Image (cartoon, rainbow, N blue to C red; front, side):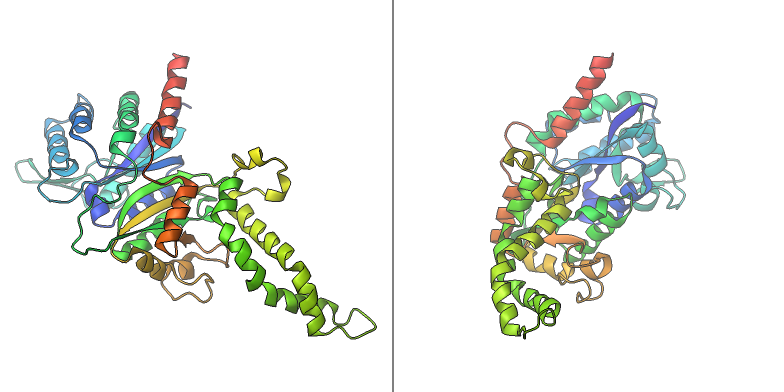
Length: 397
């Protein structure tokens, strides 16, 4: 089968109405394709002028083509009647017959029947009057309609990936003067197998009322994992000492012919505290990257070593840090409030669904580590993935 790259573009209205999580849950849970990239866009008029020319095939029903062109003008341009920033979220998928499968089997076409068996059937709207004129048109998700058109669509998205896409921080208008940006990272166990779980977690964060202004799918490397979780290593030395002392005492208080006291256990714990902290720290890095740092002898290996997938999202709005952490819940899922992300999706202290920054300073540091800042100048993952794909296809023709 033909291995293809295709895309799903979540529309501004879907994002504005916080339908993002539900749509992503459908896309990930019902497709057999691999998600390979995510990126936010606010499209320029230059892009949209060109996109209008290829958004529908030549044989499309005239009413449908007209509705698409009107939709682009009214909903995707910055100067729109609704007065909101037309953010879109791009998701790239790869797999056999990807264009047809994503369009026909998952996203679906337009129907006037109220059915929910596809993304558009659930989240889109398509209403005609008695004369057959289209009165309301909201696609929910935009994708390439036919396989023979997908290279044009992808090429255009790659061409404008830097100028129109990336982190959209600081361009949404708010009534409140103080606005924060919080980093949320969906952890690797959410992507171990195909499921709606990532979308369900994103849907939970929609309760905050915050706006998604950044998105990045990435493989956390060992180097990134060690830097990202570096503050925990020093913290673990003292935080884990009490538990270590108890364990040493339990194991050794009957092991000798002389008394082994809790004070003795505390002395031994002092000697082992640093090693114990590093072991726990390495366990977290291994979980986040899929690679044990102790197995790598060269620093250069850590820069690329990774076997996992994470999804990072930036949420912007008033009190973003606190709002996100309230919905996230306690680190320990057994102690998290019912209805929080970690209560619903966490399994233990490490596999607890998602990470969220605990302060603006932490958010800034963590964004720098994973490369989700506003400093892209030459290339980005979407442009690179599409560029490599199109080059490979041209090489085969």
